[in-house]
Image 1 (cartoon, rainbow, N blue to C red):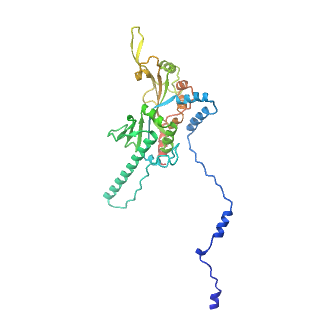
Image 2 (cartoon, rainbow, N blue to C red):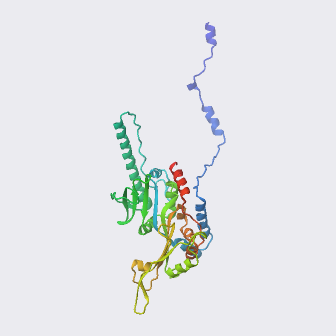
Length: 374
């Protein structure tokens, strides 16, 4: 019996095994260099056309020609802007990329609060937990909204006004350098938040940021597909595109967007008196095409009179297109969007236009559902 025990070989346990030799062999193996895939932004076909058009127009040209071509793109300004998005999309701010900023320089957005599950059969306690959760979530949305408005838009928000706005239960005022330049609507409307920025606000907005960066936030972060309203304006200081030009263009059918259907209505809206020689002295000179409910509503007017400027040598006419429920991709190339509205706008900007459209009801509903299931 003792002899059999002596013949048994004792093996080391698992912890005693040495893997040093295996580690040495691993270092001798060739390393595999796997390239990480680069994520690219996905744009719609219209957005790709708008971006490509702008790149092709500004590439491989000399400095003098670059100034001329750049002036065409910068001639079209945004004079009014309105958009809405689900307030729940503010959760995406913290993990979204910030164009032109590094990880160290970008603004830190608040973290989404953590919620504990409630196991209770008492309805009173359950309701208390529900109200506490909603309160924490509202505080998070308020802090995130304030950070986004200040960082991206460059604006400040007032306290709640206690008054509704366009069907929203309450609203706040947007301010820039102490001046009221717009409103924010909150409460209701399928839990969305609504922004309305005036012409003065748009000027301040695009001194702080660019339409491209704004498009990134609205389209890529907040899943916005359409703008509630955007006004595109062209200012003429030579008198080439005045009210008479607009009326002649209307007679030639240049304001029509399609060969089918009736032409939009034209409404000359002038106010004037006569001097001793029976010459008209205008206090208001304006031509409107379309109606306020139309998807495209034109206003061509004497902005010098509208601003009350008395300088005789100054000529200032403005042609404004009020676009409703328009594709958010128009922010990528304002000049091509403006020129593509109709032959009238194309003749003003002298730039190759690209057709952008408002959202029809069916597409609007489908995109809204797609954004909500993200």
